[in-house]
Amino acid sequence: MADLPAWLAEIRFDEQGLIPAIAQDQATGKILMVAWMNQESLQETVSTGRAVYWSRSRQRLWRKGEESGHVQHVSDLRLDCDGDVILLSVEQIGQIACHTGRESCFYRQLQGQSDQAQWVAVDPVLKDPEHIYR
Image (cartoon, rainbow, N blue to C red; front, side):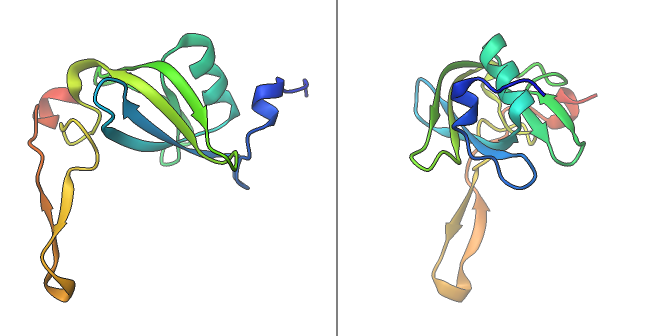
């Protein structure tokens, strides 16, 4: 196995070889999504400038937008102080990051008090997922 680049060797991947990756809109600062990256997806992201994640459900690389066309162009990558979380500053093409057709995966807000609280969808669907994924 080839030696890792110094920047990659500083990253603390978990026991499955993954690191959480937060995608944030470069213009608004809004958190769009959280996904996972492995060494290969991170290296491809750095070399192409396009967000590539590791899909735990499919057990393969997931090039964001490969099916929907809603790609993420990466303008900045940051590593947290513990070396175990990546922050991607992205330009979200098509303004949709979530598979539900919304701008962000964080569209549900906790409303109400204590045991009466409930999650409420507060952000609109921008495009019907049936028209995104065929």
